[in-house]
Every structure is written in structure tokens, then in C-alpha cells.
Length: 173
Length: 140
Image (cartoon, rainbow over all chains, first blue to last red; front, side, top):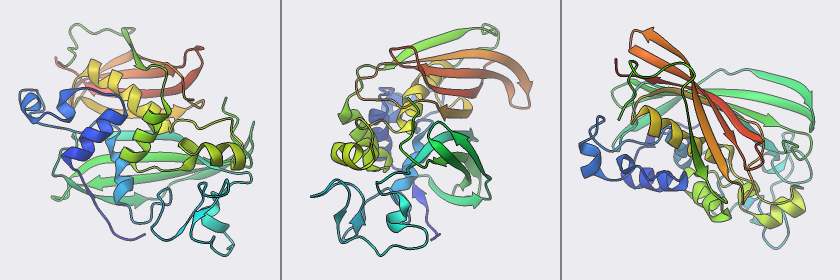
């Protein structure tokens, strides 16, 4: 994975707080936030997910000039022509016709709040993989653990995500 | 306003409606802010004709973000030490979600008093869409 970092920006925090339906001024109003215990604007607890915007390899974002598995003229596939199939499957294996990847769990450990101006660098740790049979067929779970350090090298947040791949449309409902 | 260990007790609970008749637009808003543009969450053509679902559904992380509001409203800004969630059922457009946090323990730690919460979010049918845990620093 390419080296990258996540610059925490005030406007991005404001948009994210709106998207999760949280009107707390501590997420956008510097004047109001300065008189609170945290002393300034901070990010909501799940904001680290928005680091995906800055991950150059993040595969759930369309790339300029490249194939995208969402609909265009047809129900699946837009942008450029699809890539040649590989051993791992075309388009990251996330295209239609059956199995999909879904987010099963997410865990955060906070060492301090994220603030505008922070620049966080991810370090990926080894995670587990396990399999079981479920209502949607064969399920493959995989864990990804990431430690995020600030520019001074202090650990700010640790994230642990669990993804699941199903062999057909998920039957969680 | 942070919680105080002197007034909080095990079994205390708080609920909040964190989404009302969830709109497709809010799901799109979350896609744009988070950067997760998976068409499962916004592309009705892809999701019905290619992926095989009845319609688009919310990101699990949107449900976790919505539920986070309850935790920070109750525990105070910047007080969370941990927050974890399992996504149990899909959240669909039109869902109304109610989140509940319950104090399961109050512990003495090297960071002072810490409350451990269980967290549950249900849809309007009462089905659990998210279950999780959180912990937060308390005032003495």
C-alpha cells in the first residue's frame, strides 16, 4: 500500500457531522466550541472513516478514466472498459452477479479527539481471517487493524474493522 | 456537559431517535462525506438489477455515526475512550432508528472513573440493526 496520510480539515468535519445527523456546534462552530471542555472544534467519533477520501488505493471510489462497477448504460459497469479478469476477479471482485463485500463490525479506541489541523498517518497491523456458514451461504470474515499517529508520533486512534464476503446477496434482513 | 460518576449508576439508560424516515439523500450525503461510494448505497439500478437487493441500503457506518450522537450527547464531547459496533441488519430508506445506551459498569481506572455502556439501535419494527459497546471518562 502506498504511504499516505489523513489531513483533518474543519470543512470536512462539518460535512461529516451533517451526514450523520449531528447538529452539535462543537463540530463546526469554533466560537461555540472554544467555551466547551475540549476548547475547540473536534471531530465526531466515527470521523476517522472519512480518511478513505485520502487513501490512494481505496477501491470504493471511482477513479478518473477507469472502470467503475456501478451502473452506466447497463446495470453494472461504467467509465472505461472493464479490466481483464485476473485470478482475484475483475474490478476487485466487487462487481455484480453474486458475492459482495460488506462491513460487519467496526471498533475504535480513542486516545484523544481528532482536531482540524491534525495530520494522521496509518500503520496497518496484522488482522485475523475466519470463515463460517451463514444464511447467505459461505462467509469469509477478515479483520483490519490500523493505528493512527499524529505528526508528533503520538497514537491518536486505533481502528479495527471486520469485513465479510458472502457468496450471494446478504440476507441480514 | 460530561457525566459524573457520583450521579450515574449501573442500569441507567438513555435513548434518542437518531434518524426519522431516513432519506436516500442522507445516505448519499454520508457517501460523499465519508468517501465510501459503494453503489450498493446509492445506485438503485446497480443494486436492484446487478447486486440483487430490493433497493439501496445505508452504510453500516452511517448507522454507527447516527448512533454516536447519542453517546456524545450523553457522555460529553471528547469523553469517549472506545466505541465498537456490529452491524446486525440492513438499514433501509424510510427507516426510523432509535439508539439506546445502558450503563453496564462503572470502573476505577488510571484515567479516573470510566463508564462502560452497551449500545443498541433498533428500527421502527423493533429489529436490532446495530449492537455495540462504548466507554467514556466520567467526572468524579
